[in-house]
Amino acid sequence: MNISGCMGCGACFEKDRSGCAQKDDMEQIYEALREADTLVLASPVYFFNVTAQLKLAVDRIYALLSDMPPIKRMALLMTCGAKAEKVGDAAVAMVENLCAYSKWEYAGTVTATSVTNIGDIKNHAALEKAAALGREI
Ligand SMILES: Cc1cc2nc3c(=O)[nH]c(=O)nc-3n(C[C@H](O)[C@H](O)[C@H](O)COP(=O)(O)O)c2cc1C
Image (cartoon, rainbow, N blue to C red; front, side):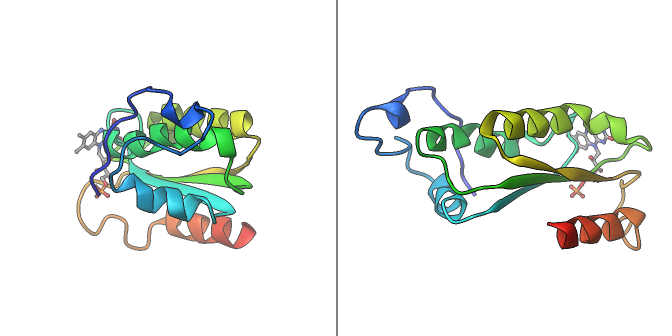
């Protein structure tokens, strides 16, 4: 998808609330978010956070704040090369804070560690954890 960064123009908060001024592939995500009860972000860890590509889409959620979608909960799925989940702490904090701010339930995070090469994810313990999180949701 081609998603531009939020320009902070504030058009989405103007009186007529015509949504985001930028017309790009984010429109498909807005459409899905307006009907979603659960938002799950999935990303590899890139320099201790979600990818810049995903962050662009997260920033554009700003345009929905003036007319909140029916989202009730949010979860995060990540893979990383490191052995320790803590490399994704900044991403977890972002999701926890976004949940607190938006009054969504934080459903949890599953991080698959030591995933560097194609195939490393096969039979990874995180897959069952992600499935369990899905069932819980
Ligand atoms: C630009 C870049 C930055 C990365 N930064 C980290 C990092 O900070 N910590 C980490 O553990 N792994 C890091 N990795 C490794 C990826 O998170 C890991 O290989 C991941 O499983 C890739 O997922 P994918 O196969 O879905 O792309 C980085 C990889 C790239 C390409």
